Amino acid sequence: MNKLFTFNNEEKEYIKKEKENHENTKSAVIEIIKFIQKKYNWVSDEHINSIAKILNITNIELEEITTFYSQIFRKPIGKNIIRYCDSIVCYINNYKIVQKEIENILKIKPGETTKDKKFTLLPTCCLGNCDKSPVIMINNNTYTNMQPNKISMLLNKYK
Ligand code: FES
Image 1: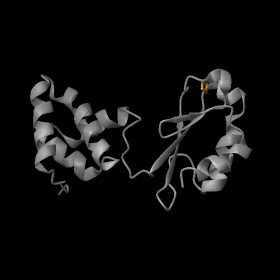
Image 2 (image 1 turned 90 degrees about the horizontal axis):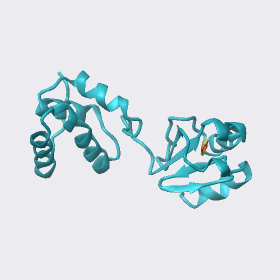
Image 3 (image 1 turned 180 degrees about the vertical axis):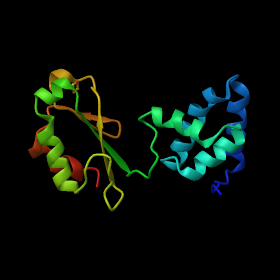
C-alpha cells in the first residue's frame, strides 16, 4: 500500500481551497505542489500519494504533471542550489570547465547533492546573461564571467 503523508490543518486547508478554486482539478496540482515544495524543500512520494488521494486523481496523473516542471524536486535537495547554464553561448565560452571545477570541489555530479546536504548541482537553460557567460546561479544570485579559479572562493560564501 502507498504510504501517505499527514498534512497539518493549514496544508489541508490550502489544498482544499486550491481544489475549489480550479474547475479542472489537475490545474490545481501545480499550485499545491509548489506550496508543498516551498514548505518541505522537495516533494516526496508520500506527499504525492496524499495529494492524489485528496484530489481524487491517480498518483501517475499527478506524477506526470510534476515531472513536467523542472523546478519541482522529487528527491531531497541541498540548502544551496547551484545552477550552471549549459545553453549555446555558455557552451561556446566553455561552461564545462566551470562545471568540472564545481564537481571536483564538491565531489558531486549534476543532479546530485553533497553528503553534508549543503549543495545541489543542476544544469539549466539560458540565464539571460549571455554577453557575460559562462553564468551560474546559486540560489537567487547570479554570477557572470565565471572561471574555474573563482569557484572555490564563491562556494565558501555558502558553506
Ligand atoms: S547561454 Fe548562458 S546565459 Fe545565455
